[in-house]
Amino acid sequence: MYKQILESLTDFAPLAVGALIVFITFFVLLTIWTSKRDKSYIKHMADLPLHDSEKP
Image 1 (tube, helix red, strand yellow):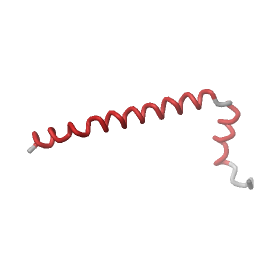
Image 2 (cartoon, helix red, strand yellow):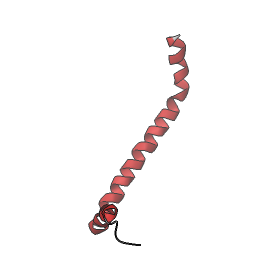
Image 3 (cartoon, rainbow, N blue to C red):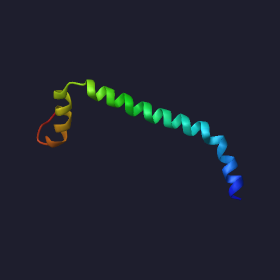
Image 4 (tube, helix red, strand yellow):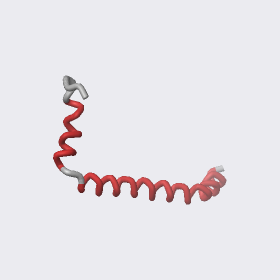
């Protein structure tokens, strides 16, 4: 039984590798984008949830 399950998983190996590549690429690009952003913009966005009394 286990042998049949393990043999059937070989069909999903390319999907797992593709998902891993997409996952790593997303977080690398997000890290690069965040590091290149202006620090005042990031500070402003981080403080937004704390300003409940302000209206947009």
